Image (tube, rainbow, N blue to C red):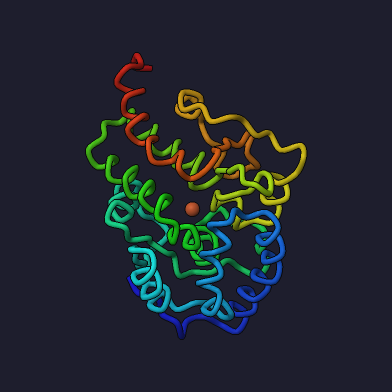
Length: 237
Ligand SMILES: [Fe+2]
């Protein structure tokens, strides 16, 4: 599919600008360093709804990733097949003005301003591609486990940095309520435990019952192989 830029209305452009204004101070305060650096590279393209071809050029040049327009209903198999090839699918549609704070459907705001900044980090990008590559070959149990690890890292992960606890999960970073909740003193943050992640059914549309912290992006590289080992050693349930 294509991003048909002329289809965006003035109201869509206004929604985009309001999202940037609403989120930018929260991102500055609570997003991890790698996110901030990637966001700064994208920022010249974020003053209006971005053109995906511009973002693709930037990511190809500086991150070794690309971007394609995708409709909102990719299967997990198709989604991970693209990520395995270092292609990030972005849904061109933008949420409605009345749903600034939350939309359960993927949209260009979540995909671009939640996910793309992190792909400039080599360690993060390698992890996403490696985890996704294993999905195609995986049996059903491992597929479920890959989906859960993806959720507790890529979508909702937190990381400890010198400045304190920061957020790298794209699902959190694209919603103001989620950021405030995850950054707050009362946020339920747990140490990283792969077995617990595998055993936990994520909450896709509510605030998270808990977050899982890593000490740095260096902790991501061994996780896909560790997940496979864990599943091989664990009894089927
Ligand atoms: Fe996402």
